[in-house]
Length: 560
Image 1 (tube, rainbow, N blue to C red):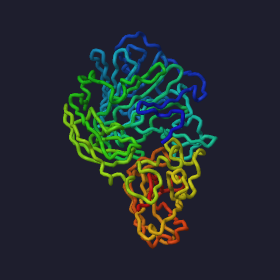
Image 2 (cartoon, helix red, strand yellow; image 1 turned 90 degrees about the horizontal axis):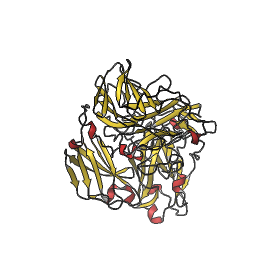
Image 3 (cartoon, rainbow, N blue to C red; image 1 turned 30 degrees about the vertical axis):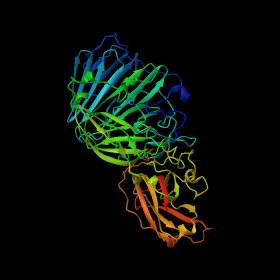
Image 4 (cartoon, helix red, strand yellow; image 1 turned 90 degrees about the vertical axis):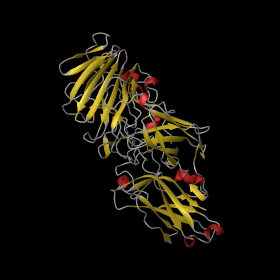
């Protein structure tokens, strides 16, 4: 799926970038804090906070009462906080037990709140804050750390900003500008697999959160969540491990991290902090609850994958109720290697783009490598291999290629940049895919028509029609009518997330294929005439307009 020129991801080493210069804003003018007394590594107690001097250009404070990050001073400028709020887990913990200790070149602050444990660590001479969060149960709602950033430091007008979008058009988190473009904190554009860090750079300062490996997160490699937001009131950078919006998996519990707050002289954070690259052997002896060092982990390696379609990237994922991992399969032969895996038995899934085309089971042991022979994807597992009379779009588990698909991960469907959601499709026109809307709604464009011709032999036989979807809202699902003479039964709704999706930047749900057995009596016998397929969206739920019942389309075809 294509992205706008600004903030375009490049491979996996990507980031979201918004600058004051790019937005045409004035030079930075943040309030100044007291300068660090000396470039000496250590900590003090000011009565209310533990104050950590990294011995570089960073001094930060953690509340002794609730474990909030109350100050983040880089080169004398305070970056933390807006609206009277601190940076913290969720919206802040209650009264907690907060302790600190120094072990050589590392300082660790531990926060205990009920069953939750949260940690901040500093290393001598580094402008980084390392964080871990151990969530044992649901006593804390969702695992989210938000770094709150003062107003005026990194103003921007990117999709995930609402600085210049004062009109609320949906809930309290989707906004419209006067020019008709939409903005929301949900419009990150990126899947987890697409980025390693997120943040801003302006006037010689870069402020970033480098994500963790997400082994205790939910949703897999293609999940989309909010990463960053900015408004006139201030900004926020997130590390979210389980989020209620459009979730496809149950929550996982245990220690997640480290994720890193990194400050730079304007450039990207060091690649040594990236997930899969970061070495934390220095944390092995810190006593972090739930911590498992490299010696307690294993690796899975596959010599190759056959039966792939070379036009698409393939991803290999491991998942069980306790952890998740993923990595790319080599394009030449499908070789893959997943390291740092906690011991256990996992479901291994091979994805063609985002479509699961093969699963198996694999067991990982501490300190060992599980080597797999070449994995063969059965031809029947990829719906794109089936012979079809016609097919609209490729089967990839995404709506990529359909009309407006390139816009919907960073804009609302009502955005002025969206092409009309209505319009019919003619097989053989050469514009089948680009004319077919990526989303269908009961109250917007239900009743879409697809025109196609059949040969005499084709019209004399029954055929299977398939419609693949990637997610649905309010149980929206397709019912089809052929030539106004045959109507399919209303299919049962597949399991899908119950929250918003199509309007907040995500098409990712549970891929499902609807099949319809169309009898020969439904076809027109005059081969010069078009057959007409009508696709209706049916559901007894939903609201109106873009919050009516809807679904995201992957592909559709009529099989031989």
